[in-house]
Length: 311
Image (cartoon, rainbow, N blue to C red; front, top):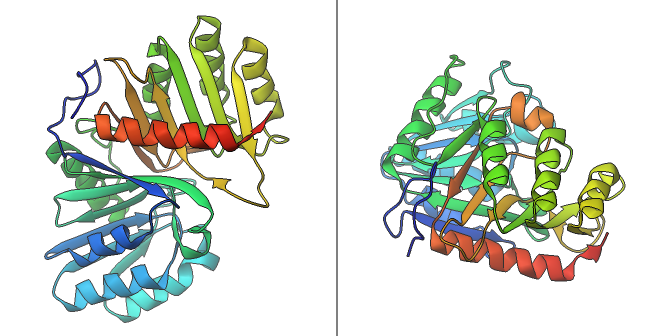
């Protein structure tokens, strides 16, 4: 059941959004989504190094579906084996446009009707330890916008993506949309982030704490982001971190604002807290007020927050 709609977030019918939490869940749902395609599969992926995904895409092509794949051009060491295997099987695969520093988006769209928006890559060696999320989105306007943008990016054609009902894109409006989410928070902000180096967003989080919003952060790399974590702590917020060498690796990019209130919203997507991610890359995320998504992300956040090392 969805919570009440709030400005900038469209009210969705129940079942429009379905949350996946990794590594708690396996990637079997991802494989099943690809295998379910009858007509088409469109994939945009920063890193693809999973033979199961490659085989599923090849099998869909052989079964008569139109399969198209965009892989980030700056990571041939990871992506080239998948590129070669897909090309050899007749799958349409291209490297990403040079218009973006990186194509960091992580999305699978099936039959132009259902899109899986991921915070993590399809890189199997990280599945067991990487904290990531996925949201299956069946909102008609969202999926249409994702496909319209894919069509342009696949042919290296410039476009200004539509936000559909609940999307946000880099390099066009991610920073503005995330700033609006943070600045609009009234009671709480829970952030789970791999990177924490976008000064505009960090400044907004600090300002939120200063106006009485309870800020909690689950992050990585405390040495690298010490200056920003210090700002959060000095303002009264709480930060916990995880080791990059053992245990859970926080690869997620999520925000939950005002959980438990009628104005609660959740963000999940490929966008990191970095200037490059927000302003130079191709990235995709969404902001929703769906109750199932909110409950799942917040519950996972609370577990990770409890298990992190206090900063």
